[in-house]
Image (tube, rainbow, N blue to C red; front, side, top):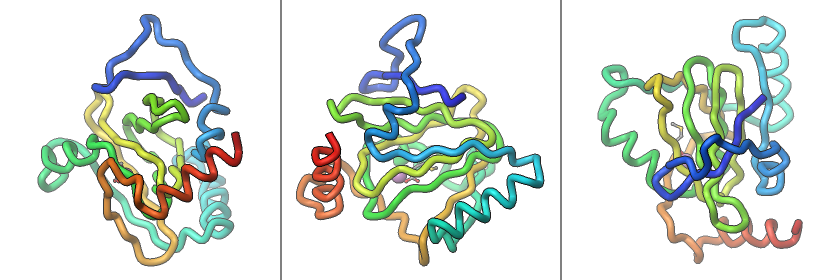
Length: 174
Ligand code: KMT
Ligand code: NI
């Protein structure tokens, strides 16, 4: 199962040993999760179904590891800067792993350890960041509804209408 736990501002573990949180902690903040098996052909159908149901027409692949990605250092630095997007962020892990940190309702970081087969959707307006795990490699499928817009809006964005909508939904569902 997906491993989810709290980390500090710099991504450091707060408890030793780690205390894992239930995946319901992600549902509460609008994060969606599926597990597929990229090596099994049945998963292709499951992926097609998710793409069709949610309108994920666009797809590309991103290989993140030192040497393979242009401006690797710069990109990783930006990925780990707290930001939001005006659209969902949809990522399917094909190889390797990494950490997606998302802010919970108390504005604390929840770390999601994504590994092969994990697919997550971060809702539009959620503050998040990303970093590699110790294996230093991840191959991600990026999905998007229509023409992709990857613009990252760094925190603070409290005046952004998409952020305001996200916050409103959080409190309405509380
Ligand atoms: C982004 O917007 O691309 C991120 O948050 C980084 C995760 S996917 C490399
Ligand atoms: Ni992002």
